[in-house]
Amino acid sequence: MEEPRRRPGRPRDMSINERALTATRELLVRRGFDATTIQAVAEQSGVHASAIYRRWPSRIELIEEATFPGLSPLSVQPTGDLRRDLRRFIGAYLTAFGAPAARAAAAGLLAHHQASERTRSPELYLRVSARPQFQDILRAAPPGSVDPAVDPDDVFDMLLAAVLTRTLLSTVIVRTHPVERTVEMILRLLRPLDQPTQSE
View 1 (cartoon, one colour):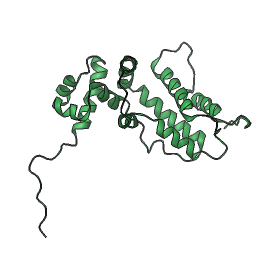
View 2: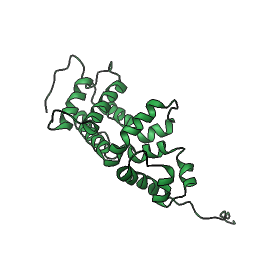
View 3: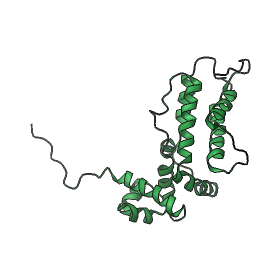
View 4: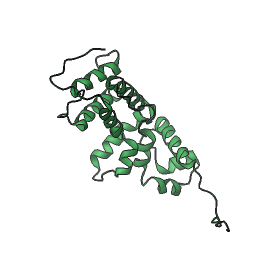
């Protein structure tokens, strides 16, 4: 049987995505949010602007994916130990938000989304959000450790606010052990009301 012919043309360059994302992070740190344009990324990465636009509709989507690519599934794989899983998740989340490029982009992205009437596509949301992984951790928790009346999305919103405060804002009070303090706060939000507090 004759093998099908391959269509002529160069094979797709799979390094384009990473080159563009790396260049975006470098530009954010060196030149700031406003200067990180598609054209600047194209010049920095050596990737043609049209190739970048085929992958990201605008510089906002490109910057979001470059700075908040979601957490590695392996780094936050649920084990069923809720405290331990939350500690790993929150530690990874703080690290992601504390990266120099993320800090450089956060204020500009927040301002853009507050002024924009466009909503993000579900596909992009899933690429840059850690919310689904947080929900996986709660689903893997032992029975009775999470109050079924508590909305996981509300808890995640509060966690996100705590992470943003700790990584992006100047705080007056210096607190030690930020991961442990945040873990304890989230556990208290999740714990059924009739369940006593347990310290590790």
